[in-house]
Image (cartoon, rainbow, N blue to C red; front, side):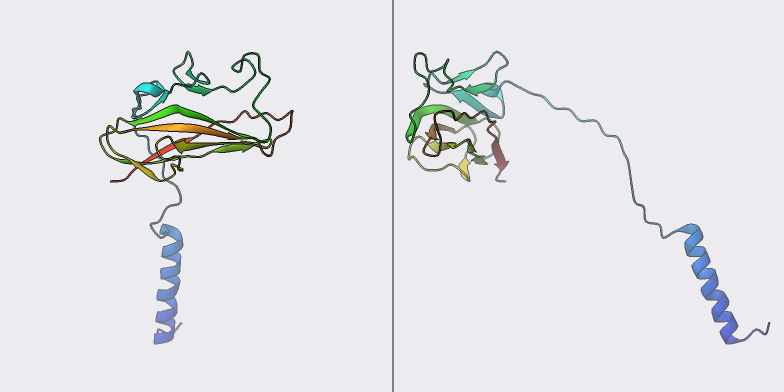
Length: 169
């Protein structure tokens, strides 16, 4: 084989491709590392975003410290349920307190199931609370509004409500 420019370039190209295949590109597809994590939990009333039952007989703290909204027949006593085709408001039924050291943006998603809609409103002005800013140490009282316009006599709702508080800093 004569050593000319074409053969030298071909040889160098082959070595480069071979070296890349043998040694890879230096990138990787997966990394696994262990880190320690510490999480402290507290009952709802003592947490960074504290939830507390208000003056409503239908909102209580259970034995585990969780807030429970119970509009079932046991909570209603002799009544069988809420009125059909009506809006029922439980005023100042729940309070949210920011025990964090900075302001948070608060969102509570309402729930809807079986023709029953449950939403949360600011007790002071009756407006929605999504995106409300809650300063450090501030408390927001909430009304729970239940709309049964889409329900029938056998409708029931058994859903979980999610409270989201995002730092504004």
